[in-house]
Amino acid sequence: MEKDYKAVWASCLEIIKDNLGKENEQVFRTWFEPIVPVQLEDNSILKIQVPSPFFYEWLEQHFIDILRRSIRAVLGPQGMLKYIVVMDQSISGKPIVTTLPSTGGRSAVKNRPQDMPFNLNGENSSDLPNPFIFPGIKKVRVNSQLSDAYSLANFVEGDCNRLARSAGYAVAENPGKSYNPLLLHGGVGLGKTHLANAIGLKTKELHPEKTVLYVTSEQFMQQFADAGKNNNTNDFIHFYELIDVLIIDDIQFWANKASKTQEAFFHIFNYLHQKRNQIIITSDKAPSELIGLEPRLLSRLKWGLAADLQMPDVETRIKILQQKLDNDGIEMPYEVIEYIAYNINTNVRELEGALVSLIAQSSLNRKQITIDLAKQMIDKFVKSTSREITIDYIQKVVCDYFNLPIDSIQSRTRKREIVQARQLAMYFAKKMTKSSLAIIGLQCGNKDHATVLHACKTVSNLAETDKQFRYWVEDLEKKFKES
Ligand code: ADP
Ligand code: MG
Image 1 (cartoon, rainbow, N blue to C red):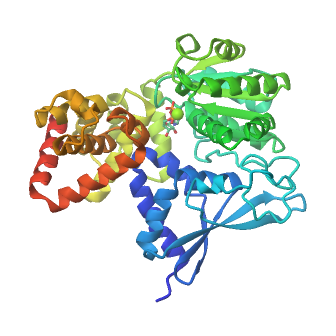
Image 2: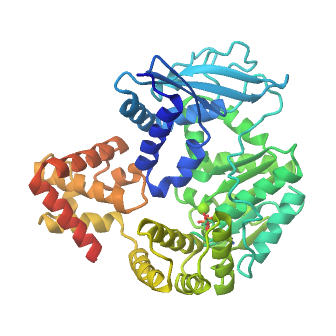
Image 3: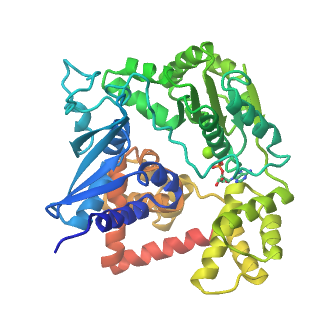
């Protein structure tokens, strides 16, 4: 039977979204939503269109496992993926289109001929594209990685963010000329990413000729590491030096690590600053508390303006909730909105989370949104988010449960009971923390991300097939809930 390519891709997306989990929604939006399915060949090869060569490489290097699994789940073991890369607009105004097979990840980079690593003029570019310079294009056209949802219009103003917001506006009006760098800092979920993104969008709107780029510090670090491996660090730096407005999100991530990355960024920073290009940085700590960052980089960050974001007061929280409801076209009694605004005072992300859960609750159970329903839900919500479960804590609970010494998970032994405990700890860590597979692996006996993935699968499988094992999983689950 002929399958429809759109339906195939929709099913793949569902699997991918599910696998990435709620905590990676942003990842999903950034890397999967922009993909357009194009064609299905022989019922087995799905062609998808991606916005840039860089995007293609990123997918192949970071998401190949999940892509492959989803394709095979939908199309069967013969399922394959082909990419169509649109190299943005070429000078002639027509998009250049290149078709590339899925290479299965890292080999994409290894296969590049060593003697002619880059094809800079790009004619006949069947070779893999350089991730940083787009063939045949003099002025770089960069996928800004900005999200339309995080606009300035959607960023509710209040005392908590007035300085940061107006500084951001000034920067967008006159990039490089007012506050440079602009450092936005504040606790988790208080709107740093939103505002930084909004400044990027506004800049593009007011200055369409400017090249704006948003990257997380983690992406930057990863690209830099990849560039080093592939001997194109120079291109990496050159690419960044072409950006007019550079936004680096969550720079605290580099603290106490990534000294080479910081060094590279230091050079890029100096270059851009001298050219009066704009740099915007976010951090969950104030500059004075950013311990672990290279001192010379830190001193540069203090050159510009540091503006902080605080928790909004109740009035602003109400406005934020109302705006969100307006955007989604949902009505809710004012007293319920007020109830949420008064009771969630941790950060805006949780405020939104509570609202979304309440809407979901009411639509799932076909219940009216009443103050009672809100109370029930908020109580649960506040309880479940007030404490964070850490990987260490999970290891402790699992070890206690099986009467094992806590350090056994770290040991290299292959004893069955310890392997099992380690796998359970990994499984729960994936389920209950926001940590990446790599971090979980690192903390559970210095394993890699594939081991963690395997552990999660093993636990799920065993929980389905083995009664005793299922009992353990459920019992442990209860323990985590009670704690
Ligand atoms: P951070 O980067 O500081 O952790 P985010 O920018 O991701 O926080 O914000 C968390 C959520 O809260 C986002 O969905 C964002 O849109 C929302 N948010 C934060 N501040 C505001 C605001 N002033 N107005 C509207 N939404 C906001
Ligand atoms: Mg953020």
